Length: 212
View 1 (cartoon, rainbow, N blue to C red):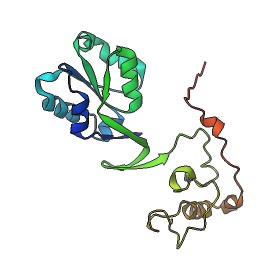
View 2: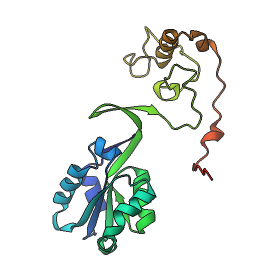
View 3: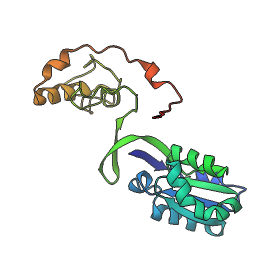
């Protein structure tokens, strides 16, 4: 799930200065769950903009160009008449909207990370999308994200009483967590394996995946 947060109102309102017809696009999946771009949030922004809102829609998954085309096509006459589109979705969705419509797109949200949902309002980064997943070696815990230093071998000398030195020994050390998890799974011997330095060529930017 892509975790987003709303930009301060004054920030996107400043970005909208000079535009009189604003079309708002929300996201029916991730941003809805984050309460940043669902029906309620789109309606709230539309009310805030008042008469400047010329149209609005919540696209099921705006980052999927096929779904975006399906949901937005019936509204293209209104979109074409708009001066700008305000995107209440992740950065990928905002770029897809711009690509499909050719319009100026103003992001209303900041994209934070790929995360795990504990409950509504509590989201935690769990994947860095590094392109080289090794959680089968680390008890299902990603050290790149969970370790403050992104270490592939640990713990480091800054660990004390199972806590990480980053942030004042409050957060659990990822490598202590990994050890305990591997112990529970009966494969603690994997903890002793030395992992090589990350092959960062697997994360060459920009990325793409072509299945055929």
